[in-house]
Length: 201
Image 1 (cartoon, rainbow, N blue to C red):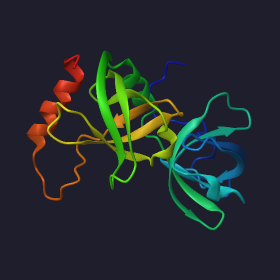
Image 2: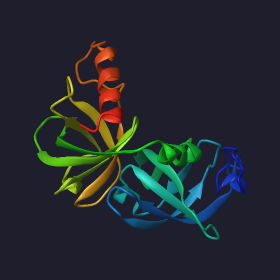
Image 3: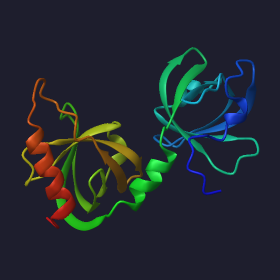
Image 4: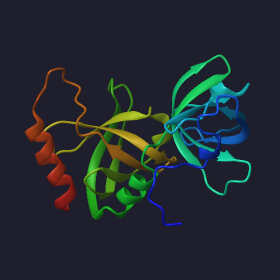
């Protein structure tokens, strides 16, 4: 209780190659749920095995038999019936980000896939340095990573969905990602970051 260490719910299986446990896996991207066998647990990740493994997308929560909370992870590869999962390094950091000062804003935004094929209009309703919440219709039709285009910003910002439903979503802002190869215009990103966090645009 109140511990700030990096242990996870499956640390009792850690570094025991033959240890296995039946788990429930929730996919936060497509809201599917599958039963799987968890094995090969380390400090940083695990293996999940299931006949339904291909229904997992990227961001998952893993619940052990007697656990009362999910361990969050990212699926990094799927081969046959096995998926490699990396635990979210910072369960604590995610909570800290939630405590990050959020500003209520009303910023019109265009949300598009990286190729610009699908684009929807929406509104950023609160924003902080590392994330924002958007309201728009049809958010589930977009891929995991998207481009946010705002009038006051010098260029689009790459973002990824932390969670979403049909009409709203929480997004992580990937300020260090750029679509132009070799672009080193970090000053523009920094200025935009300040705009989004400080100005009630």
